[in-house]
Image (cartoon, rainbow, N blue to C red; front, top):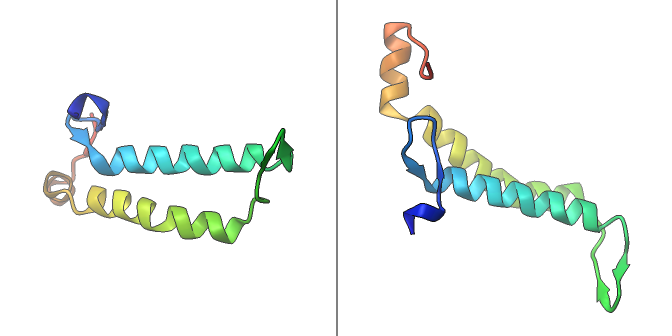
Length: 85
């Protein structure tokens, strides 16, 4: 299962990064598909920014929140070093 996860810059698998990428891709796909209201028998709902943000906000908040609360990142900021090389 860990082979399916995206990896952080340090090489560790990350559920939060994977969720953020999938949520962003799904929202982008919805935006692109909403250009056409019908694809054959399939009706596509119009893209609504508020609905997209209700979907994306918790996922992105979880990703960036875990990135900010990473103990190594906090330690490097105290030392005045960058997190990424």
